[in-house]
Image (tube, rainbow, N blue to C red):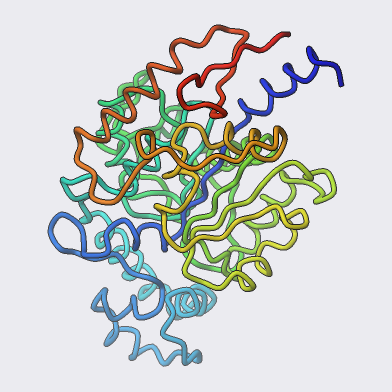
Length: 357
């Protein structure tokens, strides 16, 4: 490949999407001590008790001995005699997550959003409102933020039943002026219908398109449970064959073992093209904010290994002023780019590189 072609290739690769998939573990990491009011999120195990539904569920006489919400909800859904209990559980789940408020201090969700750019996507399987609450304040720092996709619905998101508009649930449709309808929450059953309503279908179209084009995928706290087998199948369809993904990379932020993670995502990972960390601040998002695909290309294609620059990275317990300084510097650098140039981290003192199309 001649120099001009290589520069064109580098430009295209560095501007491909970084897709971040969020599961329940991400919210647990974001509010380890509870939300603004001390209210904690929950994993699926023991969640029924947290909702105060144990006595109601006990009267049903479930066949499953599991205390996992996914197992319990699946049985309730499959038994017609349990419909009233299931609907009560639906209301309790929506009510519980609707009450969560993001803490005033900077949060991991703030940093995830600010570590990415418009070309990127954050897709969440979570019902809680924290990501959208974080977005509402991150946009005050920069409007160059990733797109969002709510794959199982969200308690803070609504949409118009008649037009392709959606947003915060208390907004109205700009076309018909009708109040937004609450987004459907996809509960943990084995067979979900991702095409049952326009909102869910649109959000899945977003993730499938981004997944197909992604250069880097970060999976944060998502266990890919059995009840999400259809979701994984849709993602795999978009990702394609492993042998066609020999340049792309996967990153896992999770407390589970490397073997367990790799086994869960074996149909997506090409050979050794993955990294595993158990702390957000060790991830590419924190170490190379807004430069994740740039760092990946420079390291794997240009054979340039660079240490994370503390001046341009996210650390624990940063203040809002410190975060704004980091993001402000990076955004200013991005604005200096010409249409035929791309970013590089080869030299932290000279971070812009011109492409030669």
